[in-house]
Image (cartoon, rainbow, N blue to C red; front, side, top):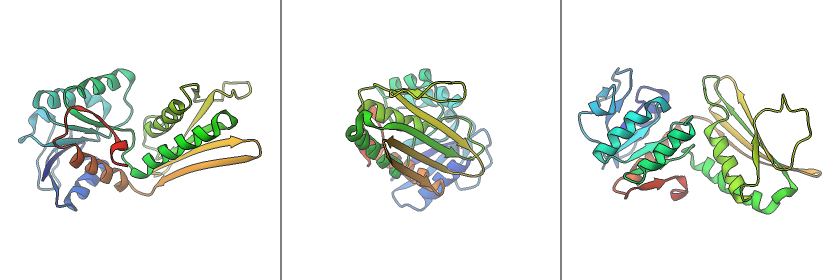
Length: 249
C-alpha cells in the first residue's frame, strides 16, 4: 500500500487525483496540503507540508511553483519521494528540483499523460527521419485560466525534438514583431487560450508539398491524474534520482 499526500488538494487536479486513488486498491490518500483547508474526504488538509499529521510514502504536487521551496524543504528533511506535476517553473527552480533529486527520488515531468509521452517519442522519431527538410511548428491550446505560456508540455516537445537534432534549433514564440522570413533553425511555438480546453498539442512538420501533423487531445484532467498516481506508486522505495514518464511508457 502506498500512502500518498496531495499538495494542491483542493484544486481541480487535487480532487481528480484523490478520485483516482480512491478507485485503486494499492494506494490511499493520507493527507492534503492547500491554503484552502476545507475537507471534502476522509483525510486531513493542512496549509503547509510541515503540518501533515503523518509522513506519507510519496507526495504528489499539483499546486503552484511559489510553494516549491517549502515542499522541497519538507521532502529533503523527511526523505519523502516527490512527484511534481505543476508547471511554470523558471530555470532556478528547475535547478533546485534537479539538485533535490540527488538526495531523494523525484518524478518530474511537464505532462503526466501516457499519450503525451508517446507523442514525444513519435515527434523525436519524425525529427530524426525528416531532419532539416521540414519546418517544425508546435501549437498548444488550453483553457482560459491557464497562466503560463507556452505550456510546459509544448516546451517538453520542443526540447525533445531539439535534442534529437543536436540542439541546432532555437525557439520563436512571437512572429508579430518579426518582419522576416522564417529561418530553417526555428521551432515555432504558439499558445492559444480559451474556454475550457483541457489540453491539445499539435506538432507540425511542414515540408515541400506535404505536411505531417502529430496530435494529442485530452478530454479531461483524469488522464493527468491517473498518470500522477501511477508515478507515485512507481516512485515508492526507489533510490534517489530524477525520474520521468520514460520509465513508465
